Image 1 (cartoon, rainbow, N blue to C red):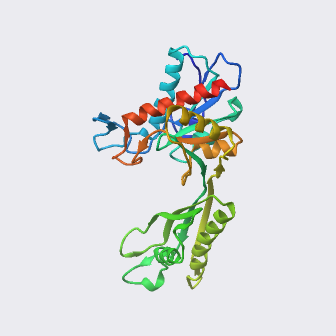
Image 2 (tube, one colour):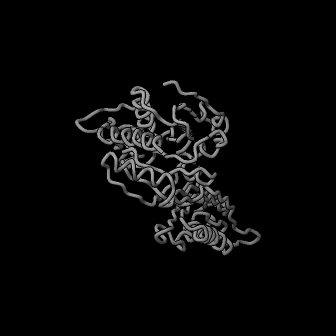
Image 3 (spheres, rainbow, N blue to C red):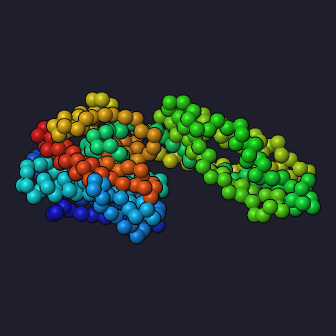
Length: 339
C-alpha cells in the first residue's frame, strides 16, 4: 500500500520472532497523523486455524480459536486504508502500529518507543461491538506467592510435616474474591503444589490478580491478599521450622480514562453518526495496549472490531461487523482529515 514500514526489536526481549510493526502513510493534508493500533498475537490454541465462512459469519472448525482477537482489528485497519488510497481520497497522514505479545502482558506496547509516534491520539481496535468505545479500563496487579511448608511422610509421620496446601486453603478461605465493588475485582487463578498423596506437600505456588479503577483500592486488596497468606503461614510452626511465604507483586498495567471532551471521544461520536451506527461509551474490565499508551501520555481509546466469544474455540465474527469495522475506520480517517 506504499507505507513506510519498520519493525522494532521488542521480540528480542519477549522471546518472539518479530517485533512491533510501525507503518506511516503520508497524506496530502497538512496536519498531524492519526494512529490506529491492533495486536498481532493470539491466545492458544491458535495454530492451524481453519476458518470457515457460513451464511453470516466466520467461524473455525471447533479445534482452535479463530483469532479475530485481534486479527479483525488488523484486517479492518488495512481494509479501510486500502480503500481510501485506491479512491485517491484526500487524507491526513496515518500511522499504524501492530503490536506483539499483547495477550501475555501487553509486552509489545510496553517495549515500543513512543517517541517515533507523531499522532496526538488514536484508536486501539480490540473490543467487541462495532461503534462502542471503551472510555476507561482498570489497573491490575499480578501476584505470585510461594508458600513454604515442611515435607514428611503422610502416612508414617504426618505430625512431622507442615502442609503448604493446608496453609494456602486456610488463607484463601479468609479472602474476599470475585467482584469486590463496582470498581474492583480479585481472583486467585492458579494453585500448583504437591508431588504425591503420601507426601505432606512442602511447597505451593499460588497466582492471583487484582483489578481496580481506583489506585487506593488496588493497593488495599492486594495488601489484604498478601496479609492473608503471610499471617496464616505465621501460625504454622513446628520445632525450629517456621512456614513462610515469598511474594512477588507485579504492576501489570495502569488504569486510564477517556473524558467526554477528549478528541478520540468527540471524533468517534461524529464518525458513528455519519455512518448510522449507534454510539455507546463504556468502562472496560480488562487491560489492553491502550492502558500502556495512555499511561505514556498518548491518548488512545479502545473501540470494537466485532470479535465475539474470544479466547474460546467458539470464537466468531459476523461478516457485517467486519465490513462495518472497516467502514468505521474509514469514516474516522475522513472526518479527522476535514478538521
